[in-house]
Image 1 (cartoon, rainbow, N blue to C red):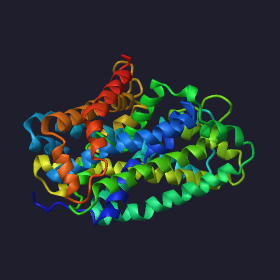
Image 2 (cartoon, rainbow, N blue to C red; image 1 turned 180 degrees about the horizontal axis):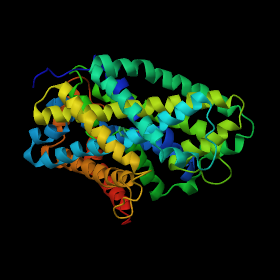
Image 3 (tube, rainbow, N blue to C red; image 1 turned 30 degrees about the horizontal axis):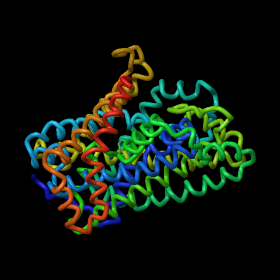
Image 4 (cartoon, rainbow, N blue to C red; image 1 turned 90 degrees about the horizontal axis):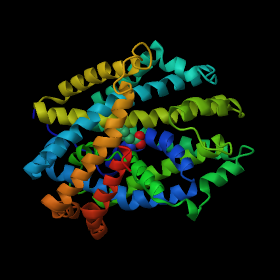
Amino acid sequence: MSETRENFSGKTGFILAAAASAVGLGNIWRFPTVAAEHGGGTFLIVYILVTLFFGTMLMITEVALGRHTRKSALHAYGQLDKRGKLIGIVSTIIPVMIMPYYCVVGGWVVGYFAAACMGTDMTAASAFGDFTGSWLAVLAFLAFVAISFYVLYRGVSKGIETVNKIFMPALLIMLVCLTVYMLIQPGIGEGLGAYLGFDWGKLNGELILAAIGQSFYSLSLAMGIMIAYGSYMKKDTDIERTVMSIGVIDILVAFLAGLFIVPAVFNGGSVAGGPGLIFQTLPNIFAGIPFGEVIAVLFYAIVLIAAATSAISIGETIIASLRDVLNISRTRSLAITALFTTIAGTLVCLGFGPLSGMKIFGMGAFDILDFLTNSVLMPLTAIGMCIFVGHIIGNKVIQDEVKESSEFKTMRIHSVMIKWVCPIALSLILLSGLGII
Ligand code: PHE
């Protein structure tokens, strides 16, 4: 390799970078909806437990795999055993498929942030559709790509770490302020009860699977990201504590986002999910509260930070993999990744406008990429990783790596989870994503 591998400057740098990857649209956009759909408080408790005992165990495994091999996912698995090569290949393809469409959503956020700053009225029912189908959406997408790749161009410590150090705390502070402000608005009580109320009757298999699926996506697992980041982690950084901190930050942001959004949009029924929630429902809520214009600017700034820092983490993962495959410099790898993202993302963007007639199996490019990654390839890769680590190479590799920097207090839980619980639960998620169960 033409340049030496970069390192995060220490524990804080790593926690911030991994948390910045984890905290994304999944927390602010997806979590509030899923939580509201599945009975609020009941879902929240299950989600917290699942993240602490399930998600973090998978994350420890990924980070340790990366740090042990000092390779990105593509070569990490194969280096440990030839039978792992396929898992490495699939984990490498996933971020390549996610990057274009994640940046398209990032572009929508740029558009809404700009509209909020300029005071443009986005409350009309057709505003979102009109925007995503226009050339402005392509322009906003290009702006999002430019921001993300500029940070990547600055490098791991000067770019990614610096941005995270400033923007992650800013995100948290702004989110706390917005949430407090929203909670003092009149008429919030009923929605608050729905978000925080616990009800045993709502606890069922479907809720648990939804919580696992959400936690899994929210922690950026099975995308090779944590393996790539682990490969930049110093040997003396405590993997277990670091991962637990990331889990806690991720839960906190999701909880706050839910607290901000769910009671506000609650109207006695269910909460609109998907793009509708933050791009259609919220502009109407903002229009009806005092200082709504300011709240809108701050809110879209938060979503923009969350989306950009996650996109940066996927971009970094692709860049690291390309370097490993082609043995090229970071700059070249970055240029290829940026070019690919621009071209593929523009096509996805146009799928909402001029190219909307182009469909495969009735789905546009956006839905296909989303379905293939979230419902098929990510659960498959994670199942593959659990079988590979738990039953082929053996958990000892991971345990020894964790112990290089600290005690491994959750070692027994980790072992049972990786060998049995995670692969079974993930198989159920895969089957339910495919509509089989
Ligand atoms: N964890 C991210 C989120 O919550 C998900 C993600 C990260 C998706 C990186 C893609 C890339 O939004």
